[in-house]
Length: 203
Image (tube, rainbow, N blue to C red; front, side, top):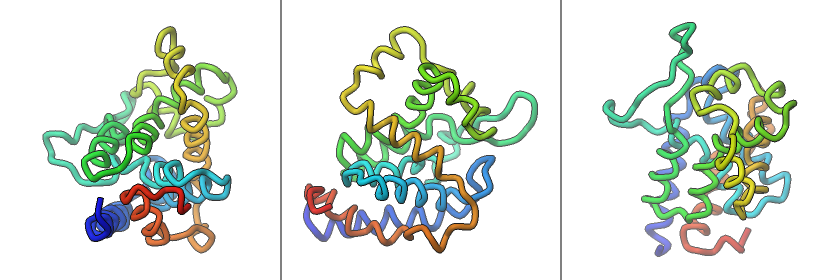
């Protein structure tokens, strides 16, 4: 992608999460924007490569961006009318990001963050108890813990370790009132531009 197109795309993506991410992060005490920024910061602090940092930043892009009403199906707890998210948001986000020119790796990582939760609940019995109540509630709608072939397929994926790492950063990115300690969305502009230009090695 040429530089001007990369700049325009980066601006579109960052503006979208800034504008539409102000709503409550489903069932948590922070906004969706702050959740994504905290996840990306976790990735940075752990020395993750650029594609993984961007995937952490954009892992809930499919939850944040507005969609046509015909595609916006919401999950609801069976015991109440509480809204707990957009069905398939991980696949929606990956699809949109792919159309914008993000790499297959970024898109796979975005698409896998729900699968990683299902994997971890299958292989680590204590992991479920570590999840927030909102994340526990969505698990059933997302298929529950992996079993059989699903578990084996995920376990053998070359990106397994990075998918698991991103999931753990996702889980940790739910701390209220730390905006002053968390880099803002626009601090990732250069990373996004470099990625779209195929220059991830700059970071």
